[in-house]
Amino acid sequence: MEVFNYLPTLNQLVSQLNADIGNTQYFWIIVFATGMLVLHGIYIMLVVLCFHKLVEWLSDKRHMTKDFLHAFRIAAVISYFISILLVIIGHFSDIFMWTYALIGLKIFTSNAEAFYFAGEMYTTVGFGSYQLEKNWRILPIIIAFTGIFAASMSGAALFNMLSSLIDKSRTASVNSSSS
Image 1: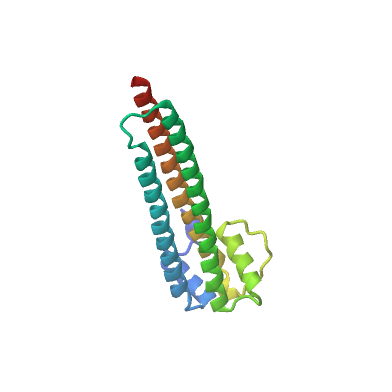
Image 2: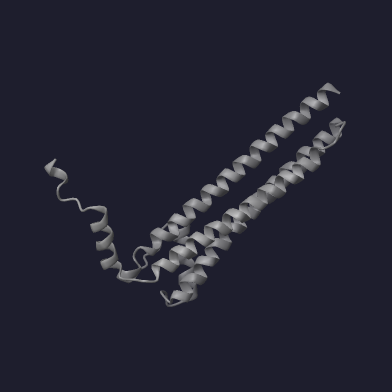
């Protein structure tokens, strides 16, 4: 089809991007982004593991009375909200990691600008009107990419915890009713 004859090959496109960006520091930025996502994933797994261990410990009672069932539900819900708080802290930690990376790259004139840029790109809000040098224009894409992946991991973890909480509550209700 003649319509697509003008499209570059993937190799040509990558070469054009490399020529346009001309920044050798991107390899290290991608390594940093990958490491940050690995740390975020480990942190989220630890939050989920602690939550599940706590819920298991709370629900490991042989004979649940109605009073205990009520206390279990309250403790489990409080644990879930603490987990949400820990997830939020994890995301702020990611933004601070990006802030320190940007400060190290000396892209912005102030540390506050680096923080706001990192936060806006990580959350994909993109509210600010930051004019980056030509060789840094791909940086928002990389930061947004890590934010989207980190939010996906966190969302999946919170969904998993909530599902587990609902299942445990149902099981506890059935066990309490049959006693």
